[in-house]
Length: 268
Image (cartoon, rainbow, N blue to C red; front, side, top):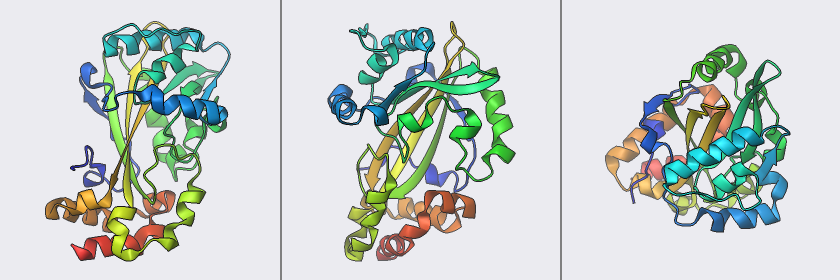
């Protein structure tokens, strides 16, 4: 098994890191029936995985049309909010950003693979508020990200990726506390199978008619054993781990895994 994405080979710090991709590569797929995973979460944890603000339905409807085109078939809303209907048809989580009150705000989202946050916690927040936990974001990156949102062309699809290490393979991970609580129980000899590289593949795309921006999140999780199976691949991961920027390490809590990751690296 080869990990689909390896963003640690590109950067061990916070950066925007956007690149243009073809429109046909917008959604990656890779899941036969996303609704089978997402519907039970909506039933059990509705506030964690779904939220919308008043007035967002027109942009939601445009997003549903865009997803229908990407899937090559009409996706009926069937009484659901349009963005929710679209999200049930794709593996990605879908987040809608619109310009309100002088800035870009999150106005609707379906979030079934959120990394340490919930839909109810972030709905209505601005770009600055959404990235508040990221050290230095407001000072170094906020103005650039705002310009990207403002200047995004209708024909442009942008992609970025980030990564972390976690001790559970679950896609739905709204709270890191339970996952981190078991770290000390992991057998170091089994660290390669007990730790996981968690990658978020994100895209940005404008909605031409309403002017909103759709932000997609597709999470991929691979055991570190999939990285350790190839010496060159592991060497690149080890280099990224050892040289990751202190701000990146602090935000991702990488120090929690240092001893176990060292065991994986040294055992190869």
